[in-house]
Image (cartoon, rainbow, N blue to C red; front, side, top):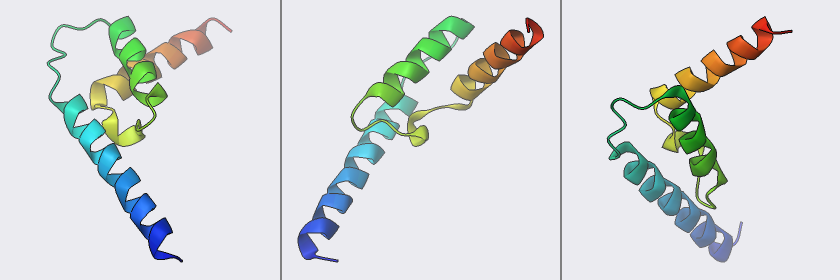
Length: 73
């Protein structure tokens, strides 16, 4: 691999880490399931978004939403 590619990959990883750290500093106490799901969509839609930006509450809310949808089938 080229040094330029290595530098680009390292920069992308740093941006994802910064994004993740910023996400983890948000106080989400008392959020509704919809707020959690909407926030997960926003985080994943960011150019530097990655699953590392999601908290357990994001995943729990999305899984509950999926289970609810499955129950309506």
